[in-house]
Image 1 (cartoon, rainbow, N blue to C red):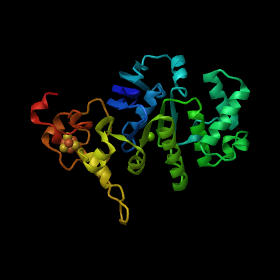
Image 2: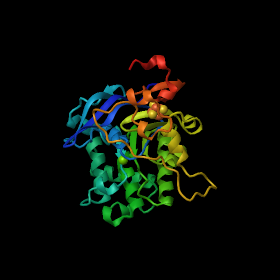
Image 3: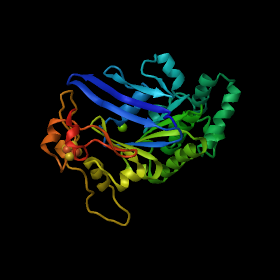
Image 4: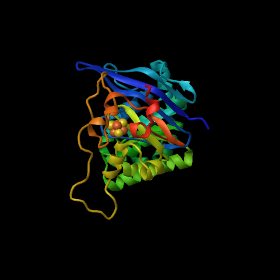
Length: 328
Ligand code: SF4
Ligand code: MG
């Protein structure tokens, strides 16, 4: 089948006092209908900016999509105007964030906010919208929906607010849900419940999900496919099995090594030495070179391509590219 969302050569740059920063530096990604795609990497790797770009919510200035395409059901949304994007946001593509307080309006009750979203996109009566809202709140596992609907965001717990935000984001049955670290701020029990909920929405309604996370445990549990990002680029992409059983990129290997295993107690968690590089337009060679245990001269001189190693499993590393393909 065709992807429902297809990102090609996306570049989202920030124009700052320090110069032009290529936060998203030529990213290719696709999301199939009904699929859960994990986008992983350390903070600052460009995963959040990629997801904000899809909804054209990158703060501008200083941010700007400078090139590339983002096709939703075949249609490029990059050239769309703000009023056209408003019809897509929440309706066809929805997003949930780490901190629901930032997307819930503190001045309105839960019911008012969801009802308004539903009315905006569906043009139905207030009464009908309220009954849809109640259904949505129940669907996301809120037992006291009849009372929660008239409460304000600050009256709710963190887990409850996250449920409310999910209810709001699925109220118009979007075909794509983008979840950016949706459970990071929550305690473990609530985290498991929210992930369960997202999985249920994926399985029961076929909603495609792009799951942005730094947590490989979440990926293993939730995702079908994974894209690993580093310094604004995708460095490896494959099925969950590919990534966990046969990671090819040294960065992916490092990430997987730093996940604590079951029945294993370690004094200190392994972490990849060094830091994500400061991004600039003049970067040369492999972005991971400064931290890579296998770095070679060639890595410093030229950027490797993202190349397919086996069906559906790609990697951007000179260890996996033959010298003949050097002409970059
Ligand atoms: Fe390491 Fe070179 Fe591969 Fe980059 S291209 S990950 S520096 S081996
Ligand atoms: Mg982020």
